[in-house]
Image (cartoon, rainbow, N blue to C red):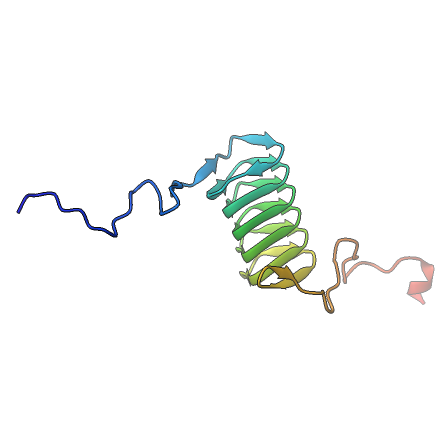
Length: 153
């Protein structure tokens, strides 16, 4: 009744079958990192990173400011990102502010997300050719005042 019986399919709380920890690495809001950042697990960024970020799963928190390219299997952007994103699944939440291109298999843009860049769909991890995608980096706002005296005629 009180004997110890171990279930054969039980996994240790510290990790899965590959032995990696399930606890995410967290870079807090009061931290600034300069240089590339790599993680083989989940990474939650709330601080400032000036460099490229690679992780299995990445969350860019609302207070985060990232200046560099991002690559992860799943990427959730809630803060500010200046750089390109490559990921199987990419989510830009309502608080996201992103300038850069997105390469994805699945893309979700929540209402309120601000995004300036090009979007390219990937099939099974391979980038698909861009069709009808116009990069917005050098575009002028559509409601900009006309330039020069000839526009007033």
